[in-house]
Length: 266
Image (cartoon, rainbow, N blue to C red; front, side, top):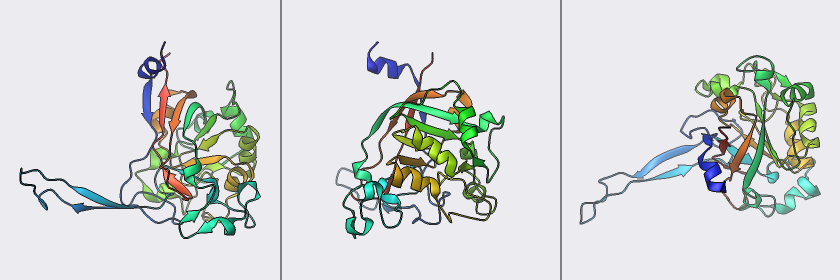
């Protein structure tokens, strides 16, 4: 079987949330905005043709996106002990920006923690533990360099902005111990459905981000956030081909991405 015939026989799942003005996002980042700069009819060519176009303004961490290793520092240091201040300029980062992310095409393991608890959506503010990940990964082998996604069911709440952001009630996600569980398995990248790949306790907001520190700063593992996993979770698929390539914005700390999951019919 050729590579393209194998892909053609798979079901493709688009794991990106649609980007629109007012979509749920972290308050720490500039919002997404889009406006038509030119409408049809504003300029009409001699042959009657016309074109429309838009202006897009967005933060790098809005919608489905990948965190670059330059996104988080600890005590002024980035991954590999690099000095964050020395690498920073008004044009972005001289190293560890999202443009250095090599596009990923490979095996992905989906750990459905919600299903492990017998629910479609984990409770708001629930902290995912290593024990949860052990249960969700039963029968699966996580190889070094694989992609690992965590299913919480939270993308089912996308259309309810306040609930999705979780300012009041919190958001489910891995706690610090679960972050170290992931780092020990040395995946190429990890991802999830929430705007922060973290356990967010009720009323706490993004006060601390220990999982980001563990993965980005200490381990050099990129994070994908705000993924649309609901339809994929419903299939019961737990391993598949993932293709993921963020926009290569030079020096940026993150960028939008449209991940695609190829699930075999077999």
